[in-house]
Length: 325
Image (tube, rainbow, N blue to C red; front, side, top):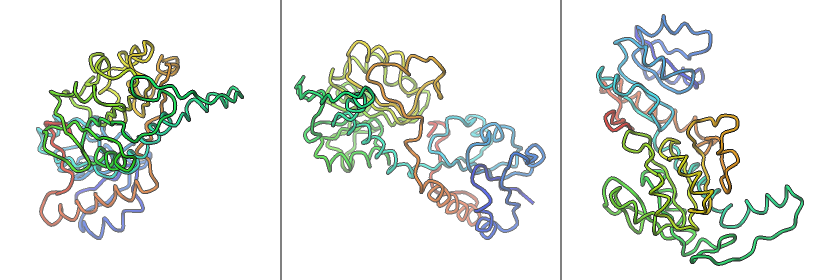
């Protein structure tokens, strides 16, 4: 009898999974689980955490499908899984609302001067930021109407971000693999024209997945093409930004501010210069957190499990292992 191993989220799903996948052993992995003994008979692995990438790599030839609870799959041995014919599905689509809201938490904090006010609060200083107009945008407190947001990655998260931006009467530019029109975007560029997006944007938001093609996609040249008043926000994967170049851009005033939910390395080491960089605000990779996370991830897995049992393969969120997303 084949196993279904559940990492991170497990016991509460066992009755529903067992009802769908009759004839399988459904096992919620715990620290006490004897994984080396379970892996040779494991056909499906789902979840994240618990060293899942390591156990996926050590799984036997019976492994057919991996469902991650995350959107990013760069931690998995994708090339090896492709050789073995293992299908990988992810949780893409469940992060749109929480991450878009985190993006606007950064944007509104910068636009409305909350970052400046909090510094004053710590110092017990009543010091409203000045309304200083510089290069067409208020550098301290300004309205979002009429400003431009450039979004690197026009998928689910990017689209939700653009939708919210329209509520604030912002101009929206997206970066995608093709320049085909997309809902909520005024304009779409491809990577060949990324310089145009940088030059036009007051806010540059990086939601790119991490692949060989996106490593340090935003680099010194990118920051040099942005406005001096630009705000850079990264919520996708840390290595898609050249962090040394970002630090220099902030210290030299090449751009105005930055907000990061992802870094490289992650977590940041003690004493890392990013901790004390000027005008840089960091959240520890929780932009996708929501009270609905487990529920939405489980919904994707259960839908895919029904298809797997009925048709022999999942049908939703299948990862292109060559592309890495």
